[in-house]
Image 1 (cartoon, each protein chain N blue to C red):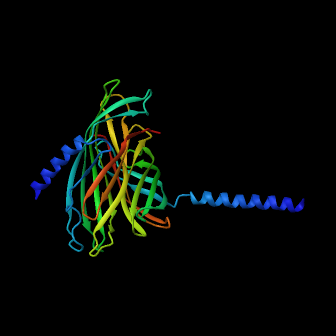
Image 2 (cartoon, rainbow over the protein chains, first blue to last red; image 1 turned 90 degrees about the horizontal axis):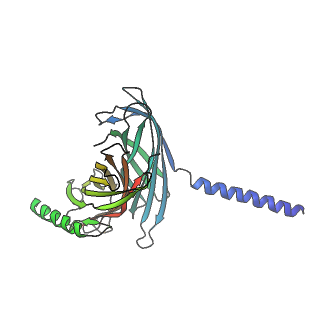
Image 3 (cartoon, rainbow over the protein chains, first blue to last red; image 1 turned 30 degrees about the vertical axis):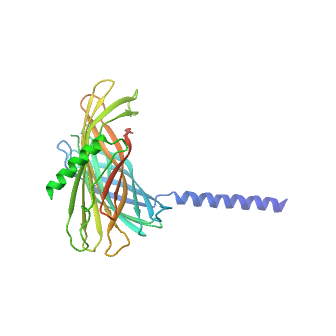
Length: 156
Length: 179
């Protein structure tokens, strides 16, 4: 009886450890923190906005069975708040986008744009936030990334 | 040289207009990256007409929107100082939409860019190749008192060892609902 109980506890601990491991594998590969990065405004009705928050990156790497090339699937997700530098209005942006690069090399680089609605929390118009992300990813799923540009656009 | 480009671009436009979805367009080759170390850019542009009907599931009730216009792509390849090849692709959206139930019009003029480090193809001297998929977002601005639409369109862009650049539209634009 004692032995049986011990086995059950060991199995429970083992399952807990396995589940914890699986959860960790799904955690963002990298999260960058933005602190008061001011946008370049190209919107006549808009204003520069100081952005703070995070950009999270998740990476999945697989191998093409035909070519043997690495397929890097990168998901970039923004979760940002901002303060208008002219009016003091608060803004919020939250969105994500996927980018898929196939490469025969063990690592690759992609410079991409992440677009999100920069939604006004006041009476000023909302804008579109375009962030330029410079990402380097390797076959182990490691990623380094920088936000190299923040611009805002408005409608046509 | 430019005459050839123009003739080819026009031919592409005609072929693409006749092609069924998923649409794709490509150049005939020899427009790709320059030789390593030459540090020159090679530019290429091609146009893809768009004509399709989509369901805007974000609207309540869901609406049917007819899209027209074109997407055109600008491509250039450049050799970096460290010898890496990069391809730069910009998708330009000149799209209009009409809601088939209430007649409200939408206008979209948007663009999205990406820059990818290219692969050597394994030969010597290496020929750069690329294989990239992106989910472009572009906005349709309502010309009336209805919400704007944001659409996501998946594209597959390849450059092969013969410098043939192909851009393939994968699926239809998908409306992205506001949170």
